[in-house]
Length: 206
Image (tube, rainbow, N blue to C red; front, side, top):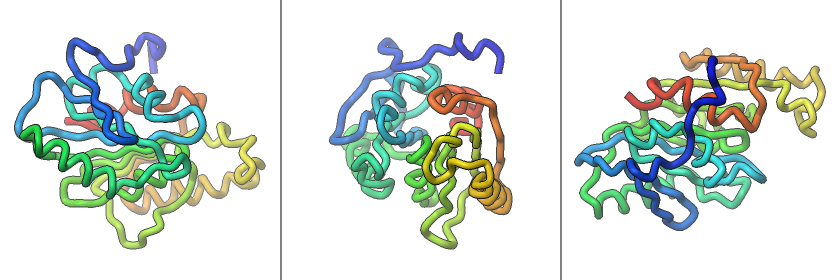
């Protein structure tokens, strides 16, 4: 991706407003309609909390949809179903319903993204996610985008040897079997949210 460093990220205060609701950070475009797209973004562990994910999200996404940033279960998060119910109630009070939903998970938050389901689900994005397959068998996804750099996981205790890259091979195979897109990108782990959300912005939000 060219001029990667020039992508502007973080909340554009002139075009969106931020609300905190429990563990969630919710960014609402100042230009709203009765039906809106929603993009859920689950963070990872340690530094990759909702605030980090917000600061690494391209600014143009904040203008197009309601953006929701939530912690993953590894960091005490409550999971997709709980957060979606809370969001639906919150948006209803403001006269907004969900038109379409995209859900992304970064690193350890990939498993949270794979919990997403429902008739409004549009895309599931896996952002250099831990290679763990969905717990619920038979869950179908309209579209999956799975981008990772397995070398980012070389020092991980579980995936720490090159021979253990078989976990990523299984993850990629499962994604393709589900009709999804797989990308192996030479991107550092902490840069992946910015890279992924910008590159696939038009598929995540139409």
